[in-house]
Length: 206
Figure 1: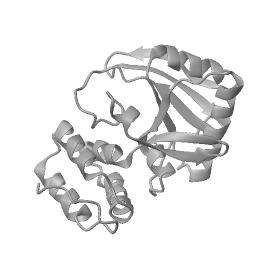
Figure 2: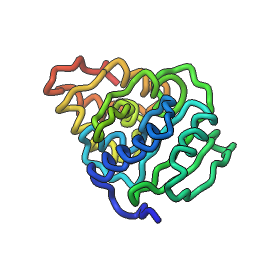
Figure 3: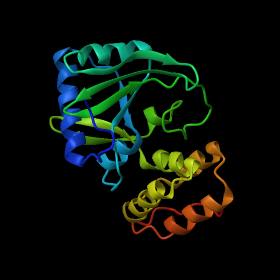
Figure 4: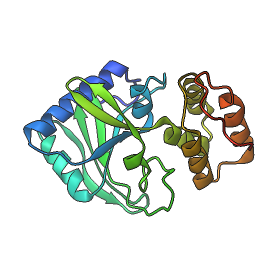
């Protein structure tokens, strides 16, 4: 069984994704997907604790296709519909790591959501995992998810990384607007990112 209490390393995540994607390739399946959650941030160099790998898919059919490709690995949770979160969900153990596959079937007008609407499909970066190029959702969207949850232990490392490596100010602003992030958190973001070392345009005043 996977151990969600342990913190995954970058090697854990890249190796696991490489193995899972090899299985997809062997099954000749190629649905679009995105890696979301903390593991997506860790893939992009942010030192965060990750306990599993979250893979977002566009449809229930895609979840079933990926699940079939992973059928040689232990299934920890059979495909199920969760109406309270609008998710079609399943969980496998690959390389000792829990890999969660799901849809998020809600409609939103903004591209500023990490796992809902057009945001994750438009805003991502490709990260090398073994022989694969893995699409990970951009850090701007991950940051706002953590701001919404008010988890400073998660958003502080994201802000540190973005202040050093740069960020998309317009995307971040749209995402904060979409989630109605409170003014005091917007001020923190503005203060931390105003002097990005890469000279990315700063956010407008909170």
